[in-house]
Length: 203
Length: 360
Image 1 (tube, each protein chain N blue to C red):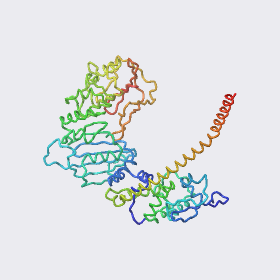
Image 2 (cartoon, chains in turn red, purple):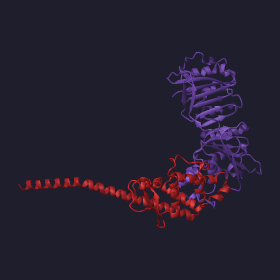
Image 3 (tube, each protein chain N blue to C red):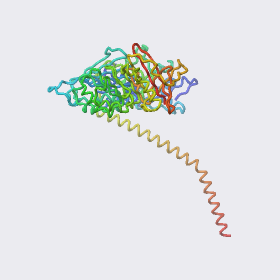
Image 4 (cartoon, chains in turn purple, brown):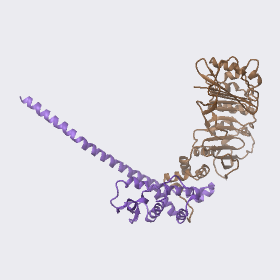
């Protein structure tokens, strides 16, 4: 991570699923609530690993973030008709696969503005369609896809559990350390009393 | 974007929940028919309908209304039977097709519509599906019997519909004996009852009067010649009598309404009563207060809000029911146990309206 004098010029290194790294400005990255929660206060020593997403997707997501740095604070979704020419180009030049990858990445990074625009765009695609027409637009998940989704969810749950366990373990250790002097004190007092009793007995 | 296929149902929950929030309930319901998983997803994200009604008639009509003024109507058209016999089991009826329509606001024009055919579902499957996806799994708000409903077996209707709040009959529902069958079958599970005819014609009128409904509404089509005796038998929390009174009842020799109020003051008339509304074409004079001590509410222009223990007040024929009513002024009378009741007189067109609020 480089850290120039001005905080707005801070650049962060992002690592993609291919292991490639690239720069993203701090201002753009701060639009991600996930980044804010994980790294903003503690900082990052090396590249920030967003290794579930490929370089092209992440670059696309941060391209949007870089562009919307100077826009006013997000206050609810814009209607697609109100989108700027740049925004429209941004969405139109993506193919379907990239669009879905961008939604997923944007959802993971918790970039509210981009996620909302993408969701509104999908809702708009389905507007005015009947069930028969929707079948042509929506792909129904196959059993393998559902299984894969479940595995991902299980993996995430297991990771969360591991983190929680580690946190609990750390907390327990801290508790033990805090309790140690008291226990030592009790033991010392007990030893002293035992010695005193023994000396009385000897007398 | 080149291709148009969206793997909507495998997107993360937060994403598809957001997508569904941008969609109209009509489109959400259209998606719910794609697969079981689609239905489960729609159910988790779909906003609860404000009102859902089911009308049994020549076709089965389910109407759902949302707070954003969107409403949908689902019409299940049934294939006519070969034998033309009455009392057909509703769930055995073959479905011809299902119409699904969207309306916006008070506009009666259809905004969008579609037709479903060749779906091997029975009536119960459709009813359950709709009730599920609009998140009204427990009960319908209103069950209405309309023209042609007499051709179905009442018990089969009850099995399909399950629970509901209000039972009502359309004025076009002609068969008197069918009315009676419906009441016999449905009264035990009815919380609010609307009768459009004079119930004196009905053999189970006594049972209707004596049942403790959350709300009992009588009249509209015919004048209901309500007597003091009828009124004293009623045990419902909310009583609405539309076009229900003959002149005799209001100002007749015995002054029935005046008598009722005097008995109420003595705590000898319908102790459950929280609200009563009487609408009459005759002019209701304040002489019904003869011999009754009352106090005019000081703040004539001050708005008073009455809260009923149940949701018995309609926000309009197409909107949900609420439990409050706002009014101004009124004449307060006090019951012997200290409870206060307020009489409120009003006129709308040719109709006189008396409302009686019993405060908790």
